[in-house]
Image 1 (cartoon, rainbow, N blue to C red):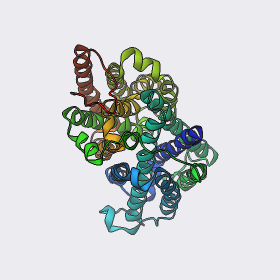
Image 2 (cartoon, rainbow, N blue to C red):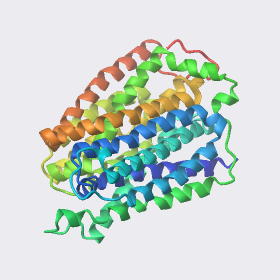
Image 3 (cartoon, rainbow, N blue to C red):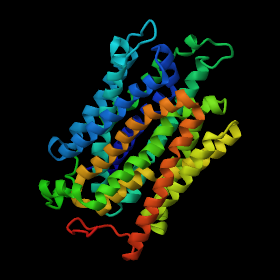
Image 4 (cartoon, rainbow, N blue to C red):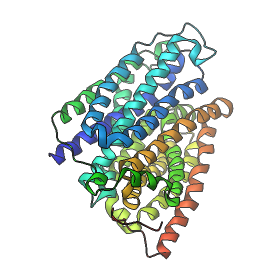
Length: 421
């Protein structure tokens, strides 16, 4: 088994997933104009990408031991190509639509976003338990390194989108809104290349059995882990952390264009660059602070960053606020997964899938809500209202940190053990 090749292929698959995220965020305004829909309708069309992710990661995580990791990743690779082509060739409405499903074009747009979400979910359903199995003695650190390629893909996708905007003159002075929509198809088509590449990398490769299978944990025991009280609390926390990170990230290009009068995608690229660098150094920091101490610090910084972004009215202030926010959200997703695998190892790929699915389901809820706030109260309000979530997280993570400290400190659980909490 070529563990290095599997790790690199996993990183490339995650990079593809996040490139979809950043490019999709960059073309939101173009899609809104091209398909004659409101921001709230656009938020509803974006939502199935996250619903699909949730459905796919939970089903895939439940069946990964039976269907096989390689088969699921290959399905995702081919699915990305098909979904992108469906979106590119969706027919455009000739005027405003009353309902998404009253028009063929917007219905196809909705279906294409759902297909993208299904592919994204399959990737995470496989790569998280794969890396946790290959690096069973260093889960949090390696999962952070893997998930560095989420912001890495945001950077790559964002820079490509920005470069194409400049090359095609889509931000030229005096350009009409209709002309500015041209080019979104080219940007989206870029996703096809890495999709094919990670599929080719895993052809013929041998994948390991998951840690749960190797340890002989039964399927019934795996499912019973879902109902542990501490896991249920962790499930709720994932909803809040994901909404804090992914909701603002998907809208940041549009919001910053309105609030700070700049190419908002640059803020996404900048914060993603911060996350990419920091996640490579998560191991020593997590050991020094403990994962829960790290999450508490992240919640504080992300809350401050969101409040600051909502009040940033110049590019300089936007980048300063984005620095705080970028540092704050850097460790949320991979550390949540790392703690899930360390504290509930008997849950195997299922619990990691449920936590990842909860994160994307949370984003599916927050996106149209943020779109409604955007329409009704302005761009800044959308960020300001979301900033309440990390305030709540500060108290939850801080309380858990003190709870484990009183019990001797946070420790990873051996897969054969039954933790009391």
